[in-house]
Length: 135
Image (cartoon, rainbow, N blue to C red; front, top):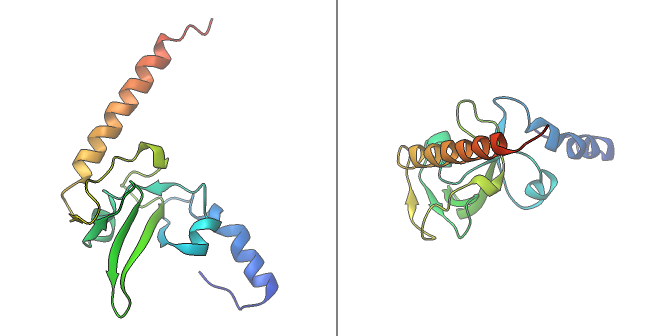
């Protein structure tokens, strides 16, 4: 996504960035200013990112950011936001910590663990909501 550089073009992009990442099958890596502009968008947990991107990434000290090597630039810290098809996304509070900062996260290694954690969280939520007496 880009603009023609005009004030109107830049304002349009800023106004629609957050909204577009809520659409099905639309996702992207963000950092710096774009990360700030898209606060509140669904987040893909760092442990899921290798499966979405089919690339090795490296754990950071939180559950939503990761580092990866970009050709000609080196290691950069990113966050994946949006709704990448069949992969889960949502609140950053639901993301499991991937382990020690710096460890490699490879495709196929962690997605089962994360889905299992979410399934357990959903079961607990349903259990406690059923216990509430709403009458």
